[in-house]
Length: 205
Image (cartoon, rainbow, N blue to C red; front, side):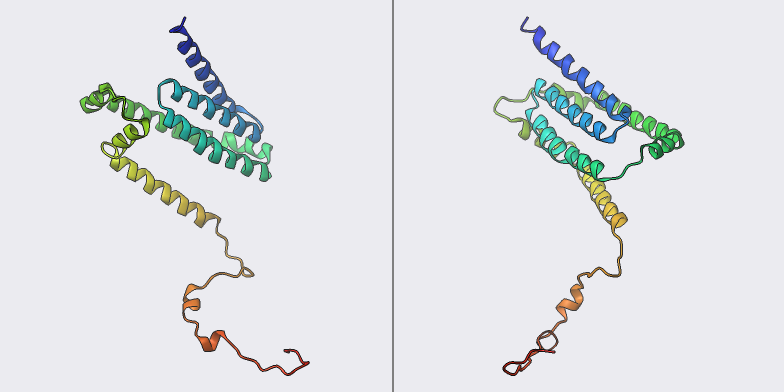
């Protein structure tokens, strides 16, 4: 019975995760989709706990549930989304979406095949982690040694995405006052300060 309990808990978490993921893409209400996404993250964190990766579970809850998913929820609630317009655009972009999905699944298949076929990765996967080494230390050792270049590349991609989002959302408004650093540095005491002698009982016109 003790060996059966972890298996039942795994199937429970895995089943709820899969159902939540399906509800994310099939819900008609965007707010409900974000809530199902949060539920999927929580159950995925439970799966990480079952395999002994407490650090990944904690990061998944803190970063994705506590920041990303909540941000999605606030953005969706603040936006005026037209559901009918979204349904019309779904069929229009369905072929492109299928092509992107096929490319993503192909990449996942190739990555899994490469990880199983490489003797180096098999040796790393079969090597037990010492008891005195924490999950954070073990992940850091692998991430910053074998996967250093892909990790740095992912950081560059995220940086480019952040800059692109800022550029796309930046709008030049004539009435907005912007900071001119060159003009601020070029200011002198004579141009920035004006001394006015005011007579008693009079104001400044």
